[in-house]
Length: 270
Image (cartoon, rainbow, N blue to C red; front, side, top):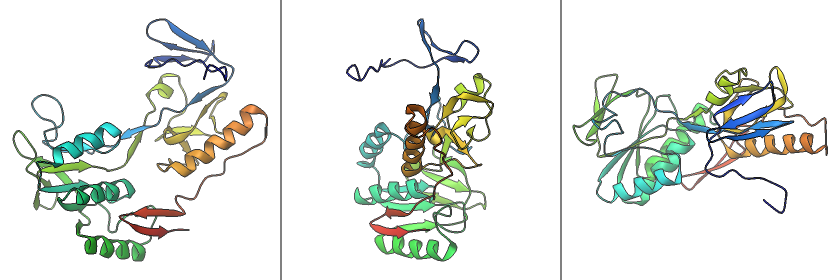
């Protein structure tokens, strides 16, 4: 970074943006002025409202995890060593990858999905049904059109309850129900926020041509992307514009996916 003229403020969380003075501030007296500002704050795991998820200590009940970071993976793997039966809430790409990992650890695995078929954002019903059959052949049990409402167990997870009154026993729960864009900083700065930070085709924020947003925090033409390929496409467009390599570069959206490998099953979408 030093060789490239980049100043890194490691371990510093930005507190607020002053768009009038074009300055970014952080606690501790850190202040950096900008000509152009890029917001790439990413996203957090979306956690649906589940009764009983939070324990007496104010944290997730023992045996309940989100699936987002390397630390999450480490914690899940450690806990799985003393678990027998796992439930994964979410039948999208992330949930299915979590299911594969738990299956490899020797657990009985159940995937619970709210929608009528798996990976509904990438697959049509027929393809979703084919994927479901493949997963069941691999040993994963799939429960579709199930809304989880509660986490059972006193001190630790013992099962989950559904809106239809049924339950599923499990001693490990992984929540992989999607992402939630991190937009608090943009909202504080008075930028236009929908589900994500609303950007134009040049990836500038609506109403401020000197502030840009890319990645999972950005909302472009009504869409928020949670896969890496569209994020790289956005980064390339913005780099071309900011460096002057192509001042007229535009981002016109991405295909949700062209090739995905899930549970050892190669999926092609168009």
